[in-house]
Length: 360
Figure 1 (cartoon, one colour):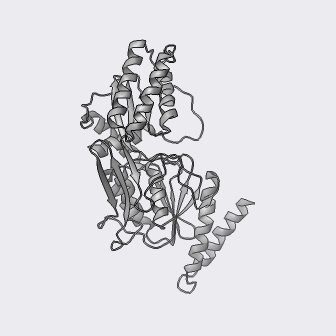
Figure 2 (cartoon, one colour):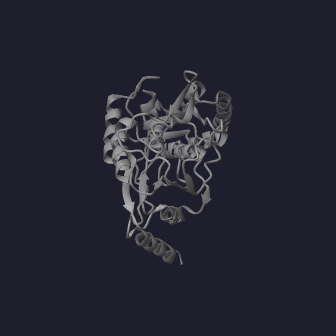
Figure 3 (spheres, rainbow, N blue to C red):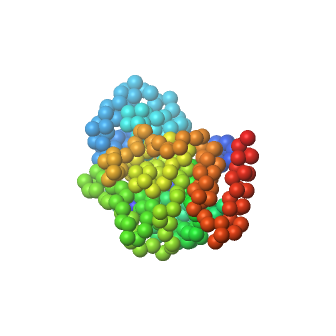
């Protein structure tokens, strides 16, 4: 059930991208001293028990208690403002962007400590995954026979597998592939491994990533899958688009394919969160998301926490697509045989000309 908890945490921490800033219409509640104390004590207890870096949890405890003694939170009567302030104070010590206090005006479902999420929560998660198509937002063939896949989250494999199979089968005959994770805030590590698997041949097994989990002192390894229901995309050029909003599991995907030398990253340095975890209910209306694990690359022996993943070609996020598309077109052009594919060279040249004209 740990996998579901990780997926839920990613879902709660990520909101769908919108074209324009939206007004804050989320409901709020008033909070009193008793409730504030319950949230603080519950959060500190959860961090002491589960946070992947126990020594940092002790430092957090000491710092928050200093704030309490200084009566920093006494004037906060807005539950939402209190959650935001406490989150900022926790992160000021940990520098861990996965660590967050979450508020809801509607009470969160009850959950047993160390137990599975409530059935209603699982059902809500499944319903949202279906609505968002498990994060697989777009798959298309662009002019010049370049594939494009936009992925806004990494769902667990039971939701992601049929979408990944359909998308990769559709794109299998393209000459190069662009995978866009600029709007992707993360998700399930097995969902990441699933997509990485499609980029390698079945007989080219790769050790993708490890995650160490503090609660049971275990390390989970992730390898490319031997069996996939869709068509693979080995050896051909792959470009991954990143932005400062690319976070958590999406960063892992970028980090993995970069370290395995399977893709060229184009865009911005990513957000810098490599410690997955899950929520603990500390009050009827508050959860604290506790990072319980840390990623460990088999290549670098470390991860991207606090630094982000650095692109191979650094450009502003809004320039990443055009940059990668042009590079992909040049790659495809270099590999085609005009005699076998008449008209393809003209299509590529037209696409290149349009890109260059738009850039002027």
